[in-house]
Image 1: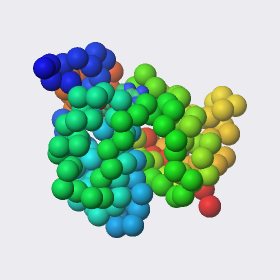
Image 2 (image 1 turned 30 degrees about the vertical axis):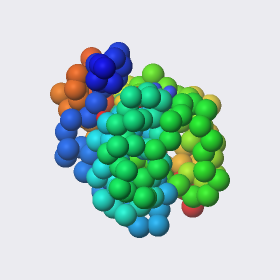
Image 3 (image 1 turned 60 degrees about the vertical axis):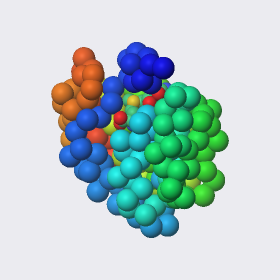
Image 4 (image 1 turned 135 degrees about the vertical axis):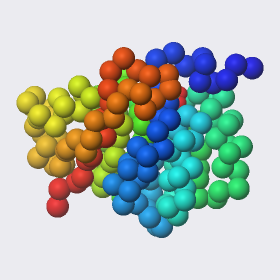
Length: 180
Ligand SMILES: C[S@@+](CC[C@H](N)C(=O)[O-])C[C@H]1O[C@@H](n2cnc3c(N)ncnc32)[C@H](O)[C@@H]1O
């Protein structure tokens, strides 16, 4: 069987552990929090997230990655692997956080879903650099509406060299926090 990564064209996996640590530290999640890792892949973010003691939903569409995740987290009762498409999977009605490096192609769809949920408390996302800049600029009616409900900022630029394979463009750590 082919490794799942080799079959996923256009998918870039974070290989810089320092970036993953920054994402998790920024999120501030801990025991008792519900956290979603969208597009969990091989579990590169899921594993250090699990170490925070939070409850994790690792959502992944690729069946081979789902098998891998189930094996990897079989002894971690706080990690639930969900075989689903992030564009349609039901989102929690109780407070939740997101820490994820998402597939760039579905960034808009996912943000639309997340930012229309009252239960989203915060998100730390890896997205395409240009996309992040457009979101925080809040120049469209939609992004301006998001900005009224959520604080949106770019924490840092993430060079393409932090991924395997490297994408053609850099990425960003996008921070989203519900306004009080
Ligand atoms: C950018 S990779 C990130 C993988 C991992 N989080 C990491 O940082 O290395 C995106 C992952 O999302 C998965 N994926 C792509 N489209 C998806 C969708 N619509 N729903 C759920 N997962 C998806 C891919 O199979 C891949 O594992």
